Amino acid sequence: MNKVFTGKFQKGDQLDKNYYRVDTAYFNDHPNHFNGLEIGDYVLPIKGALIEKLFQFKGFQTTKAYTDALFSEVRTYTPPFHLAAT
Image 1 (cartoon, rainbow, N blue to C red):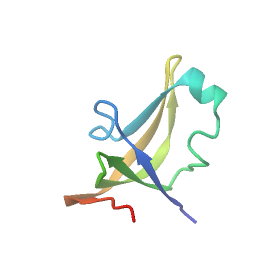
Image 2: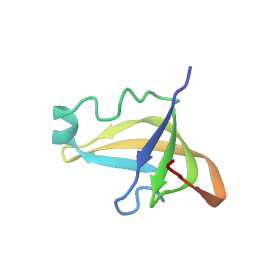
Image 3: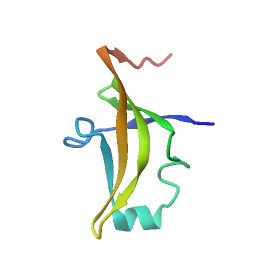
Image 4: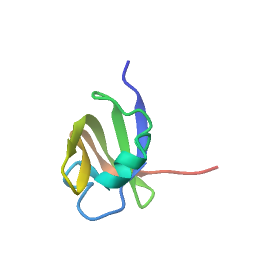
């Protein structure tokens, strides 16, 4: 069964280009950084307390410098919705 995650997308064009990047050295030292994210799981990316997309995880792509979590865009929310804390 697919899981649903939320994640902060704060850097550069990651939200627009449907990926999340960490340094490969960090990823190797912190293998649980993505909390068990598996292919097919869903992610609601958060940027500035707004959610404007729904992603589905496609897999990791690793280079010497970076590890990218790659996503396909399932849905765009127009207008984006706000995260609210109570």
